[in-house]
Length: 372
Image (tube, rainbow, N blue to C red; front, top):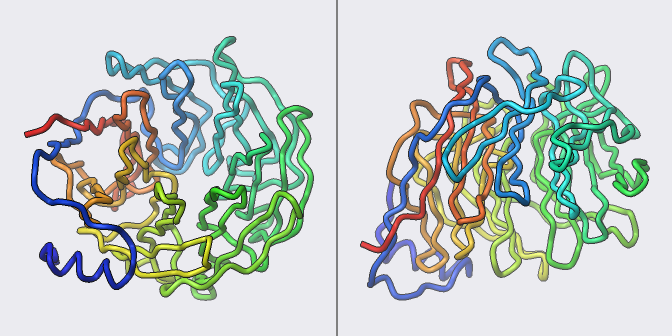
């Protein structure tokens, strides 16, 4: 239920979540519009903005569950899609990380096997090349670019449907990945967020399958200096299949997710302050959302766009401290979609699957609009 402005600001003042600014004056008219169609319907894929401004859309799961090797390139200048060189191995549930030199690192994933293989897309050559092996095969893991240019990979699921505590650091300069200190618990469907001080916050997730699934409240941080994880606080709500993103002031917004049944989805958010270790309630979204990891985007002005998991996108305005729905609706509440920030401040949103397990090939574009 939508709160009044007075109620919202009062709640956020207690939580210390945001500082309110004037609510008057011109406001943008944002919208989400359908702009293109992919060659392949896909979910659990990745979308990465290249230095050229194009968006690389990699792999994922086809309707029916097969993993895809196909790769597509979205051109935001004219909203067109072209197929480009394929992966060496089909993969879904992988990660894609933009490296400082403009290449894209693709790690792990699943195609009937839990993959150790690493591939790199070179925009200059327009193709993928093999780039070494992970220490362990893993899917549903996280990958975080560290300040030193290496990539931290945490958790996920490995061979034998094993939930992984392990973590490793991959070095693009050598193509080697080395194990580092393990997390306190095995985690899948968790998030990993780079903090301002170079640490990585690992939040929530689960281990096990129903009826023996355990969903976590726990958080921990990884230090690149020590190579170890340390406990970092406790969420108010156990959650997995959520998202997390840094705010402009360095705090982390934890968004949505689900309980162990996957039938209760959350509209709630929480805010973690890494300077104090405090975790406080954040503003409530208009819609309940889960299976949304990696689909929240911080816009250049500091707003946070929540793109998937419901029929409408939402914007969190740091001025008002409240969410508002964006004009334009999706045909379904797509899960495991992918989103990428464009150079002009728009956002492209691709794929995902519906509650009837039908993948979509559609491409949408969030437009910032103009003052009204």
